[in-house]
Image (cartoon, rainbow, N blue to C red; front, side, top):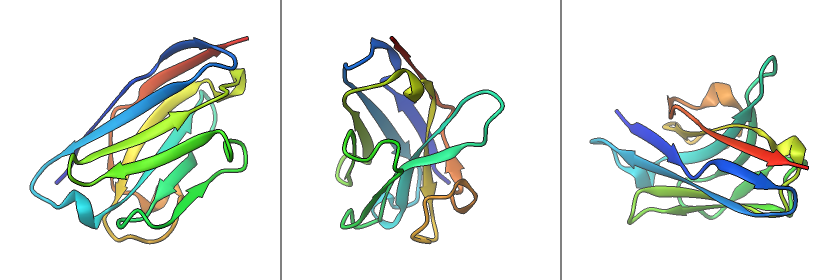
Length: 125
């Protein structure tokens, strides 16, 4: 089983950048898992923001972050990153990292199995 821990959240102003990190530990191989970043605000469903295949050859971005966010996966360090540029107030949310053990090719929350506790990102205008 994975233990997933996010870090890097904080308060920034609109237009600034932030990098989220997700470290993974456990007996299973990080290399074999697709990973994703999700975000959630109160009263809304958790949405997929960016996902990456186990081999890191394919990425997916939601339309709202495409061109501003970049997901990367360092298998050697068992770490997932989300570089967020040109942040907007609507990016304010709790961001979660998750692993998809079946490599479904999806970026939907229901296809992900292991979740972190989340890290808060607040973007002020």
